[in-house]
Image 1 (cartoon, one colour):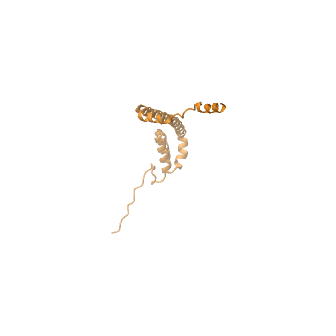
Image 2 (image 1 turned 135 degrees about the horizontal axis):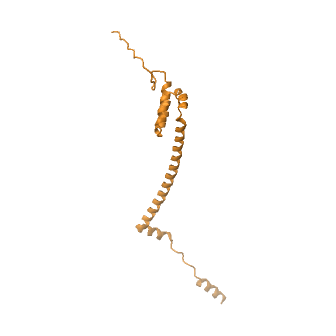
Image 3 (image 1 turned 180 degrees about the horizontal axis):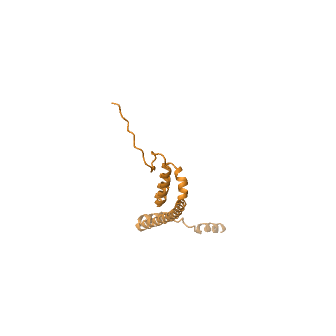
Length: 144
């Protein structure tokens, strides 16, 4: 009788059957449900827009810092005494680059000041910014 009881406990004990894979029906449901696909696209778009807005905020902050720095530099270089001492020692291309920079950052008056002070120091007639009187060009007589 004891052996029979042991056998019945083995056969009467129920083990749960393995459940079907839950991932397969959900994938199929997502593929068949167009609203689920649209929801996923909307969530991705929201994520990308959030990241883009964060990048724009950081860029605006950096741009504000650059504008502030260029205004400080323009304020420093807007000194006639400084320009008269330094500008005549620059080459024409260096003075033009400096003027281009100040024009690009919306300070054309500083650019004009530095070009004016640079031209006062240009003594060579061939220089770009020479403002003195130019001599008459000499014509060469060609022997015929």
